[in-house]
Structure formats: structure tokens, C-alpha cells
Image 1 (cartoon, rainbow, N blue to C red):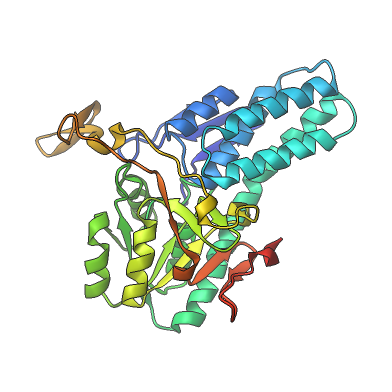
Image 2: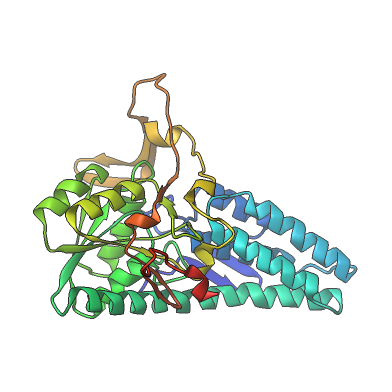
Length: 366
């Protein structure tokens, strides 16, 4: 059974607290836009598709029991909240894309205040259902591309960050492709980078791989190069995307750029898995993508439960410093893998590969 990170019913939203994983599985209520903003900002929920859905559903919960005096008031309330939510994570295009579409919807909805509210609720709830279907299609399309590219023999895969059920409404994007390859009997082994400094790989991806009984191994970010050199059965590096520019440049978790370079050196295919909502045709290239800077504390501290006598005690959680006090910190949350180093972009609508001019032609999906 695939993990369920988002639990929603009309008027109620709970999310799996990813800050407590992998040691505790605790669901926390989200009752307002402010709750969602805080959850996104603190990375209680993360992953480009997931934060867009949580933001939209949090506002749905907030307005569920609200009576608006007029359709204008309903539109103004919803629009202002959407603008506020977008500021919680500027790099991930899914959030701004969802907010823009929802704003257009309520602006163009005629009728009473109740009609405007119901139109929003229906659209937000549909996002949750559509994301799961899209992820499974990404997995299927990735599997088909891999079978055509590598032939019938099984192979191993490397990934970074978390792009599974915990980052989406369910199944996952890059991890969804790994799931599909495994289900088809084509996966030898999956390797997950720990993904410093926030450890989404060691805390979250490893958690999902173990949960799904997928043969897997965790490595540090600095081991990727020697892993590819010593394990020729690794044929594919598959990553997610927080934003794909028109030319194919892809912003993703910090460390993705260096993986694209290492992949090219070792002759390993480098593939981006992304729903079309992550493709931003208004952004011409990676040079135009704003990279979020995270708090220095993430790099110089580690937080987790105490280990006593070889056992993890989840009742005692501590934060410890691991760096020299006073050292300066540079902590970008994302980097950009250039289109030149990307072999394919897998979406729910199909797989984009470069034409004879070296273009992905991502407009084909819109």
C-alpha cells in the first residue's frame, strides 16, 4: 500500500508531518491558509505537487463553512488568500500555477457567492484526484521510455530528494517511475542520495522504499560519482522538478545539477520526471528562475530523536550543532540542471526528447 501523505474530506484536511519522519507517523490538522503557509514554510509538507494541493485544499477547508455576503466578497477573499499562499514557496511553479488557475476560475464564475465558493471547492478537490492519476501516468510513461532505451535487461536507478507519495498526492513522479520499473520486474536496485542539508532522501525516500519493499541503498551526496564508476548496472538517474523552464532547464533540489554533470561523464541517462504543471513556458531558461535561500541553521544543525543503548527514543528529540560557531553559511534550496545535460522529460502526457535542433518542444503538452 502506497503511503498517504494527504487526508482530505470536505471541511477537513490532515497532512503527514514530514518533520517527524521516519521515526513517527503523525498527521496534523490544517484548518486555514495560515496553517498551510506555516506547514509549507517549515517543510512539514514539501514537494512541488504536494504543496500546491495542500495550499488549495487548506483554503477549501477555510471557506467550507464560510458564508459570503456577495460573490464579489467571495472572489476577493479567495484571491487574496491565494496570493498569500504563493509567497510560501516561490521557486516551485506548481503552487503559483494552481493559484493562477483557481483565481481565473473564481473570477470567471457567475452567479451567487455560494456558486463562487462551490466552484472553488470542486476545483481544489479535483486537483487531489488528478494528481494521483497524473503520477501513475508519469510512472507508466517513464517505464515505457526506459524499456525502449535500455532493452529487456533489468537495471539500477539513482535518485535524489523525495519525489514519491510524500511529495505528491500519491505514487510520485521520479519515485513513481522507480515504482513502475520495480513493478515491471525491471529494477535491480534503487540508490537514494541522503540529500543534505534537509535529508529528504535519508528521512523520506528511504522510508518509502523500505515501506514498499523496493531493494534499495542509501548513500551520501558525495558518493554519487564513485557509485556510478563502480556500478555499471546503474543506467538511469531520475529526478523530480520544482520548475521546468521553456527550454528544458530544470530547477530541482540542490545537488541535482552536479548529478546531471556526473551522469554525462559516465554515460548514464539523466531524466526529469514532472507533471506538466511544473513546466513554466513563461520562464525562458534556468537563468530566470528565482532560487530560494533557506535558513543557515539547516546546514549547521541536526535534529532527531536520541539514541540510547542502540535504540531510538522518539520521546526525546534534540537539536545539535555540527559546525564551527560563527562560520558563514550559503544554503540555496535548489539548483538548475541545464537542458543540454537532460536526456528526457517525462510527463503525464508523454515523454519529451530533443529534436534534431536540440529542443524539447515542451509546447507540445499544452
